[in-house]
Length: 427
Image: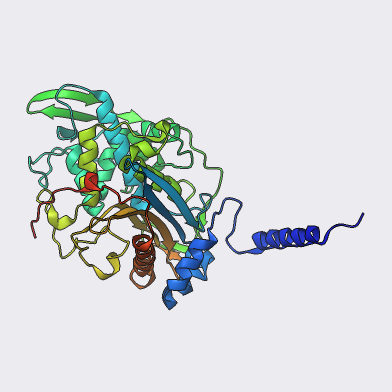
């Protein structure tokens, strides 16, 4: 039986597509790329950005652009577009793990529901195991004492590592991970503080007390994590690295037992706190309304707008934690634009997940991206191309997609009043 010509055309097209998928560098069964998004970015890209786009294996970049359209009731609807998005390809999440750690802490404080216990209650951390350290005072806070609220401020204003460590200890390794897995974030794994500790020490978390003056409101005993993690997939990065003793090791660095947070999970976590009703009930974090409002303020606040803690703005400039649009030029965004985000940077990896709002034009979009910039493939040598390639990548991707989103037609102009906050100017 003679096959119709169209049959052979379809077969040929399918075979060519299969060959392309199997031979293209960096592609995997999990990778998602929208041709439309790639074409949009390439059309507007500078030579530097085109160089990055042309080398997906070297730079390991991933991008998620999310259109947000409101209906007549101001309910947002989301449409994601992807560029080399691959949850199976490891990247070091660095400080982005601070977002889920903070969300689980807020959920836990809400669940405890003890009289006199909230995010502003004094939180005293003891030392219960090797390599642990206590915290009884915090001179950066208005009260002079540590609290979950002040740790949250530090995390989102300047990505403070010790503040993250203290919330990791409050969560406990078991509860932190099991809570995220129950919400569907199966590929996320948070098993390390940001301080030198071995695997056993990271499983142990400190005893904690919440107090009001001399009265103890709540005590949490020291805890040892028992969760079994899947480390079956070995992850090796680079060709050499410096260890903690500054010795050069001529072998790839092993990230098999490090933290893990796929870019799409990170964006969904951010979306779940910005727009709780937009995600399934299972994926939401049970956070008190006042705590959510507090969180949104500090996701979008700049260091110079904070009195407690107060920061040296020469070091912690306005766009210190705002990779998209402004970081590479150390600029303060105009007053009509706010960025609600959580970035991370370490080992040559740069990551940011953001919700960007322009109150003047009614523009809103979500944008997440990551890139790896380590030309010499040596880790821990502090010779990463953050300034030369990484930050300009985020600036330009942000500019291209922000401009596109601002100019596209929306069915309904959004009411963005929920995201307006009063920020204290201390500069």
